[in-house]
Length: 250
Image 1 (spheres, rainbow, N blue to C red):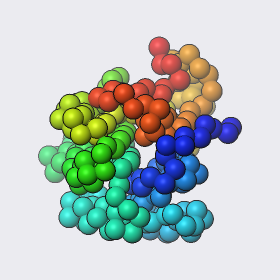
Image 2: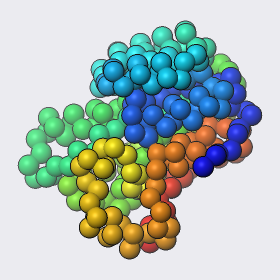
Image 3: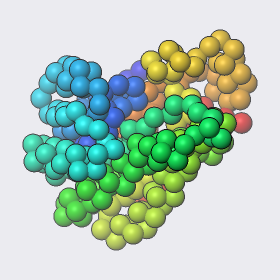
């Protein structure tokens, strides 16, 4: 399906965390198609380099462990030096590994927050000075419908995503005077390769279809198109919001 074109995005520098596969890959690809310069990081070096090579010019990639604060800050600075000041940030990186809350050590809990929550704050504060100097910008924090539903066996993930929603509101209020917009984007069950490999069974999908109004699968491009809107000038008066793309879960 061919999506909309947003003229205001052309030429902007976008930075995406976790951009080598899944929803992140769609973010990188869709923003590049809008004429943006796109920098992205990921632990998956081979996949990241392959995507950057496929897209060609106007792309920048570095392998980065986003739980390493200094490394993430350095990657953002390097991307800005290579592509220009970052005025669109997509805080996408996450890990939704299932676990039993009562059996989760405090170290595992903190590791979960280090990948699902901390990078959003670190990256946002790193790009804020650039956005302020540029006269504005858009930060999209990828949350999850699970922050609202709170399913079992995902305590660290849902806690982090709930915090992402609140962080988005707080930063939106604080940075609004400088026209830096901050919104959350909450996908429903998006069918990625990871979902196909680990959790998508006919039984699980049948149960999901009973819970939603729209019976089609949600794909990564559906989420990326929503991010394009939030990053563009078409949403210039939206900030502190949580845009839910979940097929109308009932």
